[in-house]
Image (cartoon, rainbow, N blue to C red; front, side, top):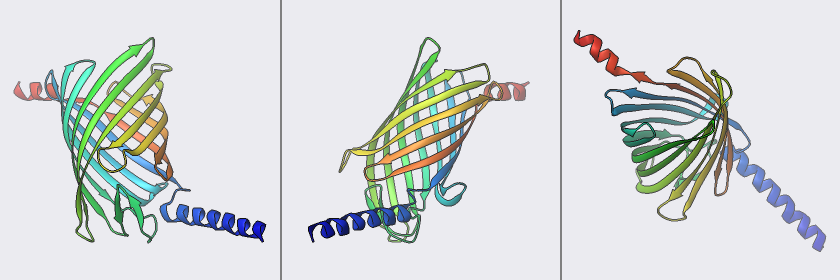
Length: 242
C-alpha cells in the first residue's frame, strides 16, 4: 500500500507539472522580434527607439507588444545616461486558464503598462572582448484591463553583456540580466542570452539568438531576431539648413 501511495503521488505530480506547462506554454519555443535604434541629434545627445513583438510560440500566439523610447546623454564614448518611457501591452494567458505574472493574479485578458525608467551604461574593452554594464531602475504602472485593478511596481535590473568580434562582419553576443523586485519577493527573473551577429553596414546589424527566461517557478525558451539600426540625424539637419 505504501508503494502504491507513493506511485499515486508521483503520477499526480507529473500530471500537474505537465498541465501547468500546457497552461503557460513553458514547453513551447516562443519568439521575440525586436528593433533597436540610437538616433544621434547632437554631439552629446541621441534618441533611443525600440519595438518588440513577443509570441508564446514561433511567430504565433501573441504574448506582448513593447514600445520604448528615451533620451540619451553621452557623457563620453563609454558612458551613457538615459531617461525613458515604455508602453507594454500583454496577453498573459497562453490558454484560457489563469496564471500568475508580475506579482498580480491575471485572467484571460490584456494588461497595459506605462513604464518610466532611468538607465546608466558603462562600456569597457578587454583584449578583443567588448563589455557593457547596464544599470536600470523602472517604475511600472500596471493595469488589468478586464478588472480595472491597477498596481504600481518598482524594480532594478542589471545586465552584463560581452561581444566577441569574429571577423569584420560576424560577431558573437552574450548577456545575462537579473531583475530585482523592490517589493514582495526580491527575485523577479533572469535572462541568459547567446547570439550570432552580422554587421550588414556600419549602421545596421542583426542578431539571431536564443534566450532562456527564468522566473521563480517557470522557464521559457525564446528565439530572438534583433535588428539594430543607428542613424546620425545631425547630417540631416545640416543638409536642410544649406
